[in-house]
Amino acid sequence: MLLQIILHTPKWVFAVFVLLVWLGCKQLLGGSVSLAKITVMPIAMTGLSLAGVVSAFGDSPGALLGWAVAMAALVLLVLQQPLPSTTRYDRAAREFHVAGSAVPLVLMMGIFFTKYVVGVALAMRPELRQQAAFAVGIPMLYGAFSGIFAARAVRLWRLAIRTGAMAAEARAA
Image (cartoon, one colour):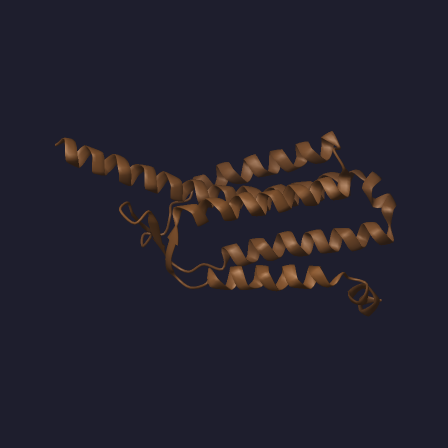
């Protein structure tokens, strides 16, 4: 049955998978990343996550609420965590110097495989949409992924803002 599922998967899905693996693997290495990339990736992945909810459950208030609650909870939780001590922001270059991390890869694969598995499950058993645990649990999982992505970006933006404020204070002194 697994072979049949894979054979009936559209080719573009494999291209998206390869792209996400490539982007995630790039994050395993430390280096510099622009302020724009820090912003675009969480927006794109949150959009993909929300699209997964809408494609599976439509505009169901329960599904959207579950997604939003999980996202908000994870944003609040992750914002409590400090950035790695090696993370720096270069105000002149508008770049962050960050350590490598597997978290983006894990999150991207989490969203991708959740969307894939949910799509297959609903194609095989459409009645799952009506089961409360499925209709709330899956959107909450998507929301959790989105919340982690968003909070990681917000933590970096906070660093950039603090760095700018410290530079302004130094100029004023």
